[in-house]
Image 1 (cartoon, rainbow, N blue to C red):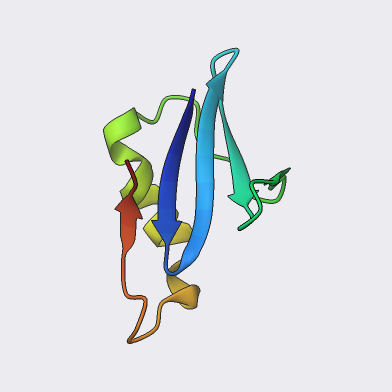
Image 2: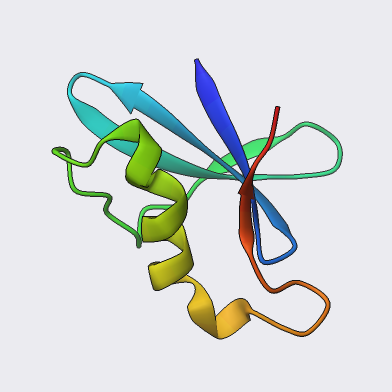
Length: 72
């Protein structure tokens, strides 16, 4: 199961696998690419993911895209 987010205008998803959180970049065509540079702490709860992503990617914020939103 993938949890999808709009992260300051960029589509990303997070998957829980073998006790770890894996982060992916989502394309407009449905292609998913793993982001290895960002490690999400394994003890983070699902309801904390949006805040964590906002902290990590805050430099991408703009007037038009000023938040991290869980999709669906």
